Image (cartoon, rainbow, N blue to C red; front, top):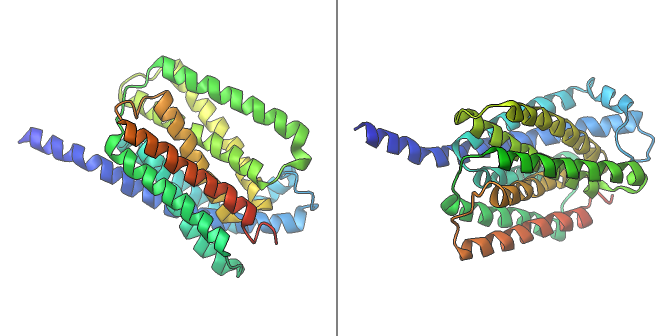
Length: 301
């Protein structure tokens, strides 16, 4: 009888994780809309029109914008739900579900700004959502979780360090020429590592492997979250909110999935057809992000 109860609880973990991740996507969409409103007002009142990234003065001004504060709280709830979902389901299942935020954000922003999406933008959104939906469907039936050892965590930290250095150099020398897609991809990449580190830390805590390396990973996670947050706010100042969300809900999970597959081995038991499906679905979703960046009417208004 006890064994049966344990089996039932185990069977419910995956759908519960998916449901919690879905709710997180809703909060992500609402938070993005509120934050975008706050950043837009600060850009008008404190910006110089250069679009070179938010200054310290502008970041301070954001704290006085109620809409931005409300959006930040909602994004905090979205992150909390994502972390809870990661405790119930594999990373490659949970992370892509946030794409639901893209649909919600597109509808909300169209109503708020009265900027109608054209056919290409709608097609790009369909590509993002469709690609991620196929990806999650395949992952839900093929993904497996493994113990995350010291070697895997060390590899993740080294790769993240290299990514941060590369972006810091690009930002320092090419800042005046950067467009919204630079910040969006940067935020998506960083948050992909944040999700992976969060999953790694949670798994190591659950398995009793909390040590100095795990603590260091927590510190790095917080730093990457802050840097990614700066990129997100800057992206809001130069692009439409659904474009930002498209990057976060497509680039972020794709990065996290690549790490989960290559480093964490969550797709080690996936058959060949699943691997091919992952690649094709991911390619369609990422192509949708670039198409949306190129043709979104609000970005080029």
